[in-house]
Image (tube, rainbow, N blue to C red; front, side):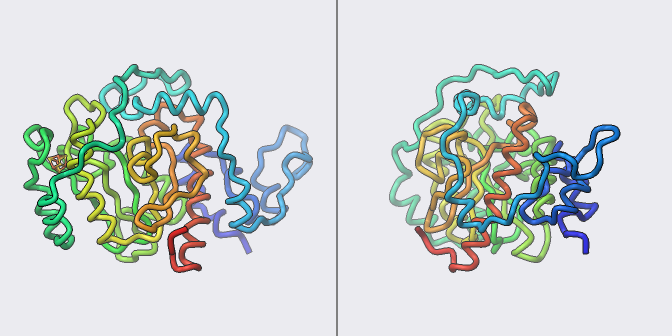
Length: 321
Ligand code: SF4
């Protein structure tokens, strides 16, 4: 029987991600299936390359141990450039093969003075609908007076997977939904490749998507420390209410918020963190991937890692490490 990952829809999604079919997880395939997927040189027989043999299946826990926390020099450079992850929202790259790294001001500290106790206390009592209404009325930071609308989030209110991004861009500000436009389409394709979607009735297959801050920073600049600090209780309450079994942090700001680390993405990805007792996996922001398509393969590896961690969390009850 053909492996489900060879399903034409999934292969189409992988192609939309810019990933060849060979990025299907080989550990889940038979040797014949791997050989059938791999490109061949003219005259080469299927499965003729020693390099292209299927690997024996590896337990998920073992893969976790084998994750490489030491990035290459290129990854370290990527991490420094992550302040520019969203630069393309303002100025899309002219060439995917020659990405340019926009110079951005230094990133705000991850931890800034917290919101007032009264604000924290109020937010902690709100349910989903009340929190959404509270967010749409919020003026706790200067972004509240600059937005068209706050972007609360979208998806299943009890989703098993919660995706956290950075901040709304111009299109999100107009539509009131996170991750729309080109980056949103890429995220949808990435999710579809692992059987997930932003809309649906099944909490196991429908994610919830939110951002670290809910209102658009003008000019698509980086969120500032006071904005993150004021908005943090809203995200924390969202996480508490959704209570996902896995958090997927996309981009530096989400990664910093959910891991508490200031290390670059290249050092955080393929490692497991916990936030509110929930497993956290870090990967690149889709907007960054649009500018740096070569890193899509790493993002795919991160999605596979996330799937493994979700499976472990579901097996063990998703308890904190
Ligand atoms: S960014 Fe967050 S804290 Fe600032 S006004 Fe919008 S919802 Fe309120």
